[in-house]
Image 1 (cartoon, helix red, strand yellow):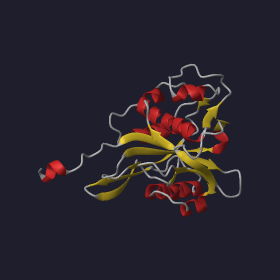
Image 2 (spheres, rainbow, N blue to C red):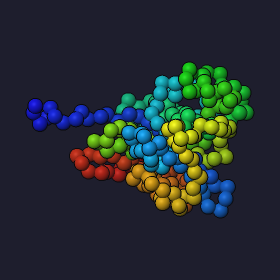
Image 3 (tube, rainbow, N blue to C red):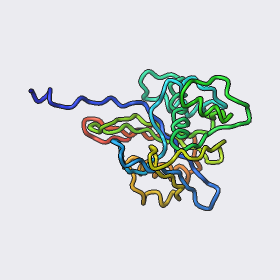
Image 4 (cartoon, one colour):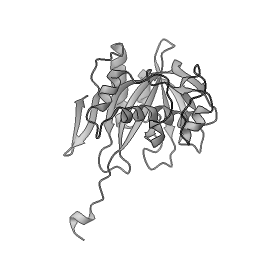
Length: 235
């Protein structure tokens, strides 16, 4: 077998999204972190933000409030086959994955049941009478998993305030769940948890943005690798 043939196939990163829920009710802001199941192949036992891959239904589910135009513009930069629907799907994936992993529904129950509901996880979401809201989302970072990892994601990191959670379903997190523990931890203390490197970097970005008042004009960092070098660009 030749050296080239023996190399493992390079994984193409899958589009994914993450939601950072922020609680600013007290004197110190807190973020929601979840501990991944130790049996997972990808980042076992690490504390992370809820999130995961996009799914087809993320393009079709009814919403209340569209993406902020600045958020949409930043999402479309450096995107393969860019489209507003793809930007929408990324934001919706962050909301859906948060619901699946934590039982928290980001959205509003003021509009009645959603009219268009794809089969699958969104049907469970809609059963609680909540419309996901996109206009409450801030887009603060993008990162591609380095080559050589067992899974690779092109992840977009969104932030929303905990007061925009419209409903909670208990019993989602447990010893056999994807996330076995949830903690609201002060932003200053979150780095003391067992974190993936990119999670710590995004926490630094969040803290900097909070200190500046979460300005919409601030460029979004894009972390990725090229020719073995770790790069930080801006969107």
